[in-house]
Length: 197
Image (cartoon, rainbow, N blue to C red; front, side, top):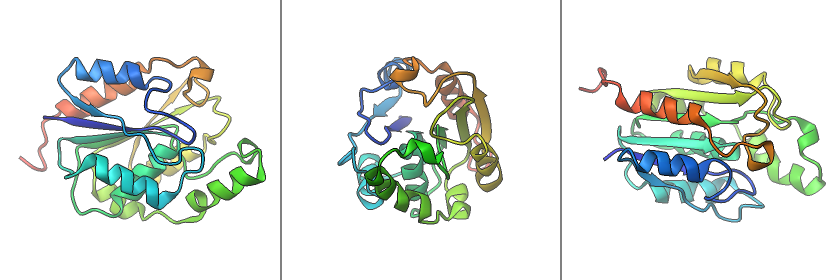
């Protein structure tokens, strides 16, 4: 069975934003969908989040697909750099290597974000551990610089998509459905995998 694990962002929950809609759409098409509640969501830490993702996945394989939102995307990359299995594919929604400084409004937020921004990710290892990457951005995201689009293309050979006026892809931005994620997941999960017949 094809499995989708969806990782929420900083301050997020499994039933936030467009996640319930996507979960229902995928489940109705026969996917197993797992949306773990990440630990200490207001103060996310790399090791704890990667450990939780690893626990949710169990044994990764080429029928495993990961979808991340915001810091959930970072969590996915940091998980993939540590494994030696190739999964089916990854979709990043508002993923980042950098943040717009003004989105970190307090000293506490800057301290929490620092390890995520400063701890280097081995993108070569990440790139080798999934068959395809898609990175989706919004042209008016107040947290993620659109210049990160080029970094995802360069570092992960990701297919990149820019959505119009979706903010940070949250309920606050009016995003309760995200058809582009469903479309791309269905595309990558139905492809004939010629590399590993």
